[in-house]
Amino acid sequence: MRLTNFTDYSLRVLIFLATQKEDRLVNIKDIADTYQISKNHLMKVIHELGKLGLIETVRGRNGGIRLDKRPEAINIGTLIRKTEEDFYLVECFNETENGCIISPVCGLKGVLNEALEAYFKVLDGYTLADLAFNKAAFQQLFSMHNTE
Image (cartoon, rainbow, N blue to C red; front, side):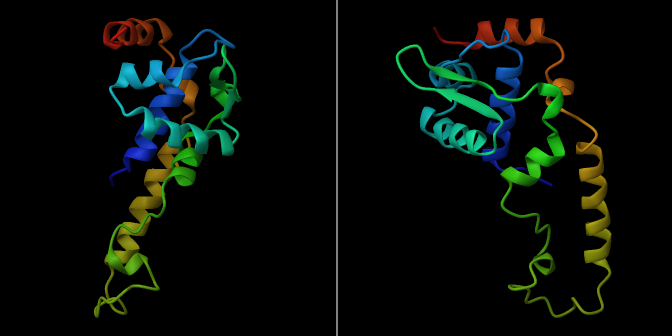
């Protein structure tokens, strides 16, 4: 299973924010520079994370972004379900566009569906706090990779 860049960047933004001092406003440019990701891509990610209620955006000269929920309240499985468009592992998962002639008798869909359920069962067991628990190590890495 491969996640889209959008979900990858969403996770990275949330990890970045979770490892900052509480209530610190962060610049999108700082995140873009640290991860070497396009600021335009991140703006789309940040907009969506704001719509999901995960981050707060503060406008103005001294504005920025920060988490709007505690890291312990942000479930990874839920986040991935909300940031991915679909989970069509194979053609037959998409009933409206399935052209596979063996679908009526094939057992592959059931096996892959079971695997997908197991995948989400694992992800549902983790929160953002679990991913960003070592704040000092993250801060050291971020400072080494920020171009400013």
